[in-house]
Image (cartoon, rainbow, N blue to C red; front, top):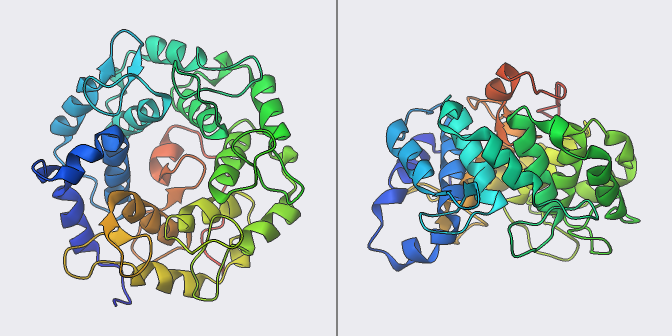
Length: 324
């Protein structure tokens, strides 16, 4: 078990992810391909290696995922457009300062077409609704400078109805609180300047209680710890200025213990197989904790803070350590 972040190994691991086209798992995860590129690229940026991937190759792949009929992006070439990979495409292009390669009006039209009469967003034309999709829509429209086209009041009203007695938020009205849903709802409200709708103290206590004796965080009561919640819990606490309510040393040790010390990458917990999702969100969690040498992550947009700063979208100077 390593007690430090194995940056060089993680960079190499991410660089080699696209070279496994003969592996069955590569094809089984095609529905996440564009998202995975965003996760890998963001992790590289946070580790200070934004040029580790071939920029033009990445951009060409993004463009190959364009769904001309829908006006959005699928997760893989020839896949139907969905709001999640559409956001990933936007984030990748912004990271590479290549937004001029995007048909912004069509993408905005696609995103807005997914808002339902209740205010929540669907992920695609098939109609699955989730507060995750509302956050994705708010995030994407904000990054594109088109947030003024959103019915903000209707969007906020639905999120409000998903708030529970414990201060948390669920995926839909009446659904149980979950750390991932908490972050997307809190971040959406932050972008919309409506954090007044959050019961800060109650929610912060609920989030702090996600830490287990081994230092890891879970997503809801009575569940196992998982490295990805190092981001999903910490990002919300950061927006609420309550990161100090977490034992940062124990959480840092837990994240580092889940690294593959031979090939790189981070798993959901020690001893499990690594993947790019947990690698990204483990590194994101370390950034929020102020781990030495990492670029600051913006907890609202889940992108490098300097990029969000340059776009004039920073919502505040978030607490990034437990001691500042």
